[in-house]
Figure 1 (cartoon, rainbow, N blue to C red):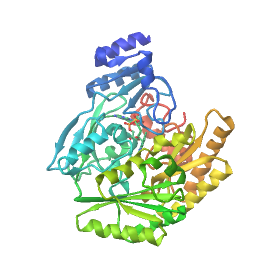
Figure 2 (figure 1 turned 180 degrees about the horizontal axis):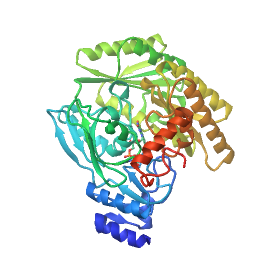
Figure 3 (figure 1 turned 45 degrees about the vertical axis):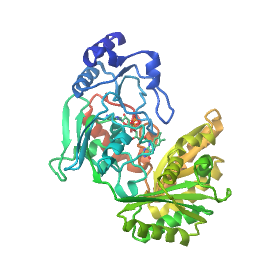
Figure 4 (figure 1 turned 30 degrees about the horizontal axis):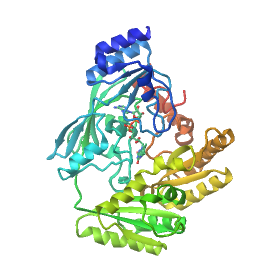
Length: 459
Ligand SMILES: Cc1cc2nc3c(=O)[nH]c(=O)nc-3n(C[C@H](O)[C@H](O)[C@H](O)COP(=O)(O)OP(=O)(O)OC[C@H]3O[C@@H](n4cnc5c(N)ncnc54)[C@H](O)[C@@H]3O)c2cc1C
């Protein structure tokens, strides 16, 4: 079918205003945070699941790929239309439909922004913990599709721990509801978990039921600078040994500190090799006690400077530094490969030293930061795409990083997903048989490989 005919059929389904094949508009939806670019053929901004269902039936008939997209903040290329096709943007399905304050859940549309839900539930004394650093832009649909994490995962877990149920348009166009609105439920296979983290390859999420918690009474934030990165890594392990769980233990190395220094307290005159940003929560009585234990663990590991944020604005400033790291990395080099490996917490010193070795071996600037409490380190390999030799050293460094991670019983992705960037490495972690079984699952949901093709698996 001619593209123009397809556009007019899509306009019949979704409305004239919400379908476009204009080049200017296509460009706006052609990339995500990886900065890899491919143009879609058509953009559709659906408002109803029934429209999406019709679009899926049509695209199966026309053999046209469909790519779901939230805010395009993904770090693995999941929403990039590598094979062209119809890109579905959920910007018009962005409602927070319901907050059930008695049964502690929220129902949202997939395009609702994470930070908007956080603020709304907080105004009611409730708490939605998953808080990716992109929370002011990223969508809850994208969070579910990527099973996003965030700083609070160390105590509160990741998105999957909050998804109670979903409404999903399957690749064939059929609509299913998964999960429950109750605290428990074990009826049949757990499709909610299968969909969560499936990176837009098994179904299109059109409604999400999310678990809420009561808001903790008190929160305190502490920063601890170290002049030896190994001391900072050991402090993380010692905090756990004290049988306490801060709600965030974030880590930044020297290169990371350098790029956000204007947001950080003065103090070590450039001697700091690492910073731990630690947040604790609980009751008014508990929090000071937990903070003392955190301070003890930092002092025992030679922290050179420890500060407890005096007020909310001091704490906010520290978090701005942490949350703006990703974009500030470009001060070091024009391009980056941002990996998000995870190792068991006790292996953090080993992986940091392995990364240091890789940086020296390949003569590359590497900045490490991330969710140290979960052993989840964002390894930013900085390079210049225009320099072919540096690019090939950066790619070799990735492979070596993944081998080192797996040899320490880690995983190659804690929260960013496989998408296109990690697809070539999938087998390294889950093996031939694992990949074969996953492909069979994909085929049973999407026999014509219409939904988000080219993702997770190398095709
Ligand atoms: C500065 C910055 C900081 C970040 N920090 C974190 C962090 O701390 N933790 C973390 O986990 N991630 C982080 N990320 C990565 C990213 O924000 C998350 O992966 C987020 O969940 C992506 O949401 P999105 O709405 O941008 O989705 P997109 O990037 O648009 O899409 C991501 C994937 O979800 C699929 N998808 C989107 N909507 C749907 C839907 N309705 N149905 C089915 N599939 C869908 C897409 O096809 C794609 O595969 C960060 C990114 C940036 C730029």
